[in-house]
Length: 571
Length: 50
Image 1: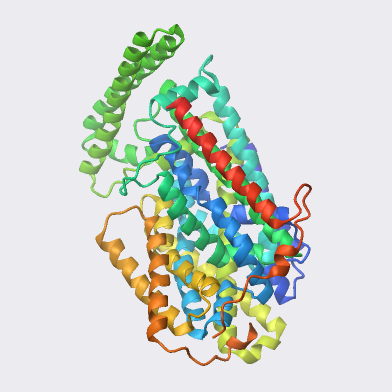
Image 2: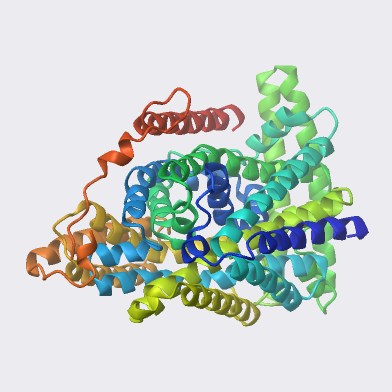
């Protein structure tokens, strides 16, 4: 990185954070601090919802996933538009009608105190743990590639996000997210254009797509019913629907983004904006990864993209083995490129037999390259059982640093940080709000009248959660596959949480005790299944939700309806 | 405990304020239609290039 890159990076990161803090420095109203300004329009809400979901992992790992496994991951988002329609039609109008600050406050109104605390507690547990990952995930990759100190990246990004989130609350989060998304869109568009320009002459998008397709990277829709396959149309529709419904409908970090605004209309349109754009956006990010795969068939790639890890072992006592592998890889890559060019030529000859032979030769050559890569990972693992053998998270950043012009490199690194800050800010905002409203204020009902004190407490809790996340990121070790680790964590808790809310909305006769004990039992069942079975993790959303609803209905038959609690009369 | 609130009729009666749409149901149908179109296009994309 040179001076231009640093100017772009620091200018966008610090500039947006400073702008957000400055614009919201005078907020004194609890409603504005927790829900944002009444004048927030649907565009800001829509971008804010999108920015909250799109963490840095989205822009680091997903192109790598497209590179390694193809674009099938897009199916994970198939349930999202359907879920957002349900949230718009059912969840959002009721949240606004009850005038709640948090989704769990609604549970208190509908059921009782213990169910509200269970919902809020599950959220704090799940989102609190994920908060550390949100900071750590991009930091570890950027520190490895750029050679920056990991602890400094974590502390710098952590403190930056704490400053503006504590200062302006929800209003600052939405305001900064809008500009951070502008940085993200312009950065990703730049990377896409540069990649297309850098493809071999005469290949073009169509040729590149045919190469990626022939080598198995462009299967966007998989109709298989095999339950062990992670991403299919069915897991996407069913598991994805339940995951999205619980995430957008019951996770406070999302609920807080759309319950504010001038009217119900603004929140609804913001969500519909996401329903329209999310699948195309994820498709384009994955497609970028698939095109990177094609690019590296013509431009010799490193044998292992995490060069720091590779070099650490290559310079050790078994360096000779690593050198031989690199030489074999170079030969295999050259043969694959030759075979791909031959196949591209055969495609235009319109002779089916010739094309089929060329395709088989190409697949065979690519198989040899892939085999050398697998062997390299096995060798790494043999040399050091703790070695990190998953290098797909390093593919996009390797391309950025090697191929983009200066200035654009800074912009793309800014994309990673902007995404990290935007999702982190929403998380801290939600964690601080839930702790204040559902715990602190709940146990100190007399303090509710003192608005200034409530704002001060919300700021302190937000800062505390920020410091906890920074500490967690500094001292914890995380799973290799970062994006999936977060999704798996979410799936374990989200299903049951959604079950509680669906019972609240649709099963009028079920009471607080029935749903509370049902949720505890369903959560134990999901954890047990997760520890003992090997099924796609998206299914746990469905299982947890279905178990919670079924147990609630059963328990309601057993338990007699209770008398209304002190929280019950408001509805 | 409070019984589950009934769907708010007023919220659905409020017009979306978008040209071409008089009700929220129309907006939801449009979004659903868009979703079906996108999935179909992705299936065609898979079929074309795989």
